Length: 109
Image (cartoon, rainbow, N blue to C red; front, side, top):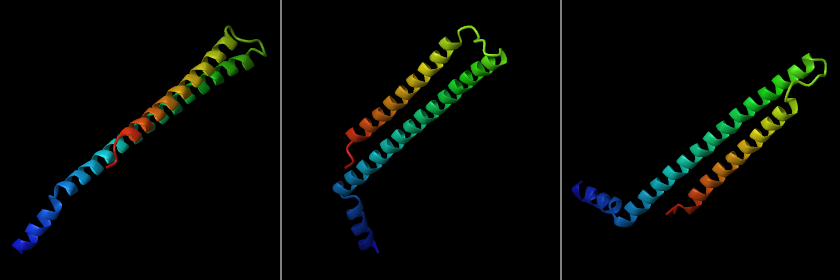
């Protein structure tokens, strides 16, 4: 029994095995963190989209309620909401690209 334990320990504690296992665990940890980053970016984009769509819906409701008379700053507000959505898409893209770059740069072995 003691000889078997010694052999198992020799195999598991071999520096090459320890280094490979450590690198694999580190890579998995970084990959998980990057996946969470992308999930957070997706949540941000979804929330921004909901807010912008709600704003456009409210402005459109005002427009309809006034029998086609545009509320003050109607077009400016619609444009601002559209720009906010475009910025949100840009932020989402940058976050995703940054996460991919970090993961690519991290050694997997």
